[in-house]
Image (tube, rainbow, N blue to C red; front, top):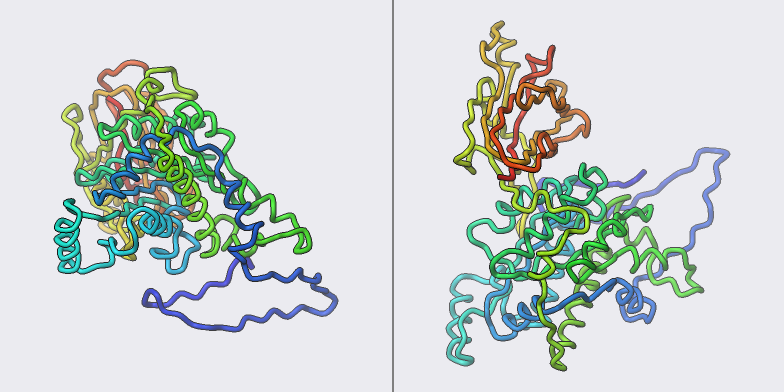
Length: 469
C-alpha cells in the first residue's frame, strides 16, 4: 500500500496504532535496512542542508526584508505553489508544513520568539506593540504568514490567482516563495507561465524578494533544470530539495546515510513532517547566508529593474494576467451567462496561512446544471455562455470532477472551435486552466462556451478566466 491513513472527525486528534502485515505462503519479505532516528546534529545532516543552496542570487531585496524585521517593522512571508506548499503530507497540515516552519524560523532568527501575532491575543499584541514603542521607538514588531498553495495546480493557475490569493486586500509581501518545480509538467507553455509569474512579482511597486524553491518527487522527478535559467537570468536565490536529499538516499548507514527515502516522503509526491522540517531548514540556511552577508556589510545593488527590461528566458506573455470572475470585473468584457446562471459550491478547497479552515477556490463562478432540466423534461432555449472581451490572451479556468453527472463543454473563439474541456481528465474536484486565445495584439473577441453535444443534461462549471489586456 502507498499509505495507511486514519482520518478523525476533529482536527489535531492523536492516536497510537499497531499495523502488521502478513505474507501469504510462498512469499518472502526482503530483509529491511533499519532506519535510524534522524540526527539533525550529524555532519551528514548539516551537509545535506548546505547542498540545497543552489544559488544565493542577489540578496538586496531579502536583506531589505531582514532589516525591517530586525528593526521591528512588519514583514510578510508569502508562499505560492502546489500541494506541498498547501502542506500535503504534514500532520497537522497547518503547523507542520514547510511554509509555517519557515515562517517560524525566520521569526526566531530575526525578531525572536516574542513577536508572533498569529498566536497571541489582540490584547497581548497591543501590549507588546506599546512596550516595543516605548523601549525602541518603533511600532509593530511582527512577522506575518501568507500561505497560498493549491494541490494539483501549476504556475498556469498560480499566475491567475496570485493577486487574489497572495496580494488579497492590499497585502504587500516582502518575500515570496515560488514552488512549482513538480507541478508544472502539464504547463501548456513549458515555462512561459512560470517566468511570467516571476516577472509579475519582481515588478511589484514595493520590490519584494523572490525565492525559487525546487521540490522533488520520490522518483527524483523535478523540473529544476527548466527553471534554473530563469533564476540565473534574474539573479534569484534558488533552493533545490533534490540536490539536498536524493544523493544520500542511495547511501547505506555505514556510508553515512542520515535519512531514508521513506523518512522524507509521506507518499510518492509529498514530504512527511520530517521532510517538511528539512525543507524549512534549507530555507533557513539561505536566511543565514543573507544574515552573514549583511553582518559584514556585503549589501549588493538591486539591478532587477534593468534585468526586467531585457528579453525573457522563455517568455513573458502572461506577466500582466488578471482574474475575471463574477466578483472581479473587467470593463472591456460583456458577459451573458445563458444556461450558466448557477453558482457551484462543490469546489476544491484548501487550508490557507496558519489556519485549518477550508477555503473554496473560485467561489464566484458560473455553473451550468442540465440535470435540473432533465428532471423537468425541458430544454433551455439559450444554453451558451457568451462573452465579448478585448484582450490579447485568454485562459479558461474550469472545474474538473470525478462525478458521473459532470459533462464536457466546447469552447469557440470568434465562431471557430478551439477545444473541448473535459472535467474527467483529472478525475477529481480540481481547478484546471486552459489557454483558449493567445495573440500578439489586443483586439475584440467573441467567446462562446456551450455544452458538448449529448452532455446537455449534465453539469459544467466555469470557475473564471485569466486575461491579458
